[in-house]
Structure formats: structure tokens, C-alpha cells
Length: 341
Image 1: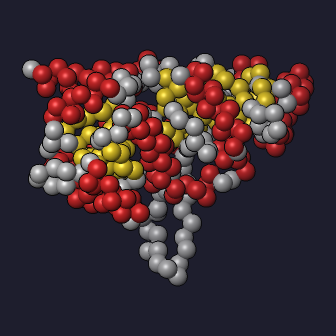
Image 2 (image 1 turned 135 degrees about the horizontal axis):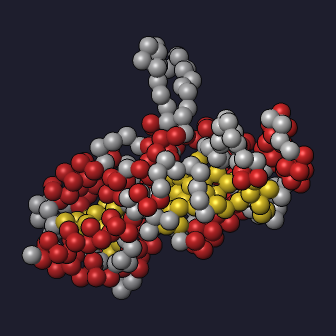
Image 3 (image 1 turned 90 degrees about the horizontal axis):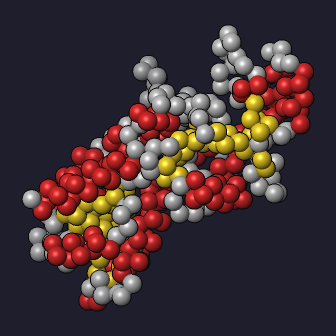
């Protein structure tokens, strides 16, 4: 995952579709791409558009977080209605096998006989998919104009010796932008103080360092327990608990009302642990099992983190989750074995 200006509320690997009528070009390009990048190579633009419409036909996850009552009045320019927000669809997304097949970026050649690349991009406009145009020297002025008009997000010359490297870098940046755009409806919710770590630049840097260290390829905002649910390509899950001094104080007050032992209250007051109260309503709540040693997330903020190898926020065992490694194996079989048969 590439570094971003903030921690997104959710991110998972997605598929990149390459469209070019030159099959040999696509075959050569596929050999140069990182194996961990999910990609589909398509020589027929219409077939590519149909595929994208098929796999991207659902609403963005963030839109599922808003549940409009059936009897609510219509919203117009003079009527502002506040809808209840439920963040559980974010963590629920990791239980869907279709998430990895979602197309986030399309790389399309400009010069194709049936339809040029800009027309393909116009047809993609409503989908939110990010677009990279491949050009020849004669097409660069057209590409610059298309970029300035917002029709494409990047353009790369086929004749550039660093074409593959430029493509890979652009794809990584645009996949982040794809999720940032999808999460915009949640901007007001994510600006709340208890989620302030998402927009803290130093926390963001620390989070991406952790992601690289632990090989996380997907992550999801977890309301209960508060923090992030993170997974590797093999489906190994970790729970990152996050709390600041105010949340620590609220945990202390709640634990005190619940009759927590004195030694537990002392540990919470020390701010060196994070108390997980996500299962506090259970009759046999175990205090010591729900206290986790924490570390400062950054040197200059009061956010503290605790990393759990056994997440509390999962509905199923990690072994039961559809993981990205398995998806890559299936995709590789479809793209290479079946096409070569």
C-alpha cells in the first residue's frame, strides 16, 4: 500500500484492467507487472466495458453506511435530513469474495481501430474508475487536453523507456484515490474527534510503516473495538486498537461504573494500556483478558495503539476468509492457463 495523506476508512486490493487491441503488447506488459498486482488483459474494448459494469454494479461501501428510513420525506435543496450512520458495512466488506474483482483503474490505449481510448474513458465516467491513457508521440497533445478536462487521470507514452515503472507508480496512486473518492460521503463522520487519528499526518505515517512491516494489504475501520482491522495477502488478521487520552478517560469512567477491580482501574489510569469494552455486555466479561499493553502511536500526539494477533472484530475465523493470495492464483489461472489452452 502506498503512503497517503490520511488513513482511509477502508482499503483492499482491486483489479486493474488493461485494454489494447495489440495482444502481443499486452502479453509483454503482463510479464513486467508485479505478480501481486491483480490485472486483466482485454483486447476488445466493449468486452472490457461490459466486465467493468458487471463487477462494479454495486454502490460504494460508504453509501451502505447511510440507511434512509422508508417513510422519510424526500430531500430537496430546501430540506436537509440527517441520516443515521452505521459503520458496520465497512468491516462487513471483508466477508465478500467479490471485493478483489472490483475494478479501480483502467489502462487503455488511445489508438484502437474499433473505438479510441478517449471514447472508452467517456463511457467509464459514471463508474468512478480511474483512467490512464496510453499514447504515442502524435497523441500527447490530445492526452494533455483530456487530462486538463478531467476525462483521464494520467497518461503515459508507450515510447517512454520507463513506461512500465511509470504505469506501476500511477496505478498505486490512483487505487488510493479510487478509495478516497468512494469514502467522500463519510467525510463528516470521519471528522469526529474519536476518529481524528485517520487525518493525523504523523499517525498516517506510522500506520503505513506498520502496514509495510506486517505486510498488510487490506484494512477496515472497526467501530467495535475502536481501531483498524488489517489483513495480509494470506488472510492473516490483526486488530489495531487506537485510543487517545479522552477515550482512555471514558474507558476508565465506564470501567469504574461497571465495578472493575482496583488494579485494573490503576492500569487504565496509567494510560499504558487500552481497555477493549466491545464485549462488556457479556455476563462473564474478563477484565484482564481485555486489557492490552499499548504504545504511543507518534511522538507528538496522545494517540496510543495496541496490536492484537487475534482480532475481536471478526465474524469468522481468519482461515474462513477469502484472501487476496487465493484470488491472485485464480486470476492467474484464468488469464494464463485458460487463455493459453
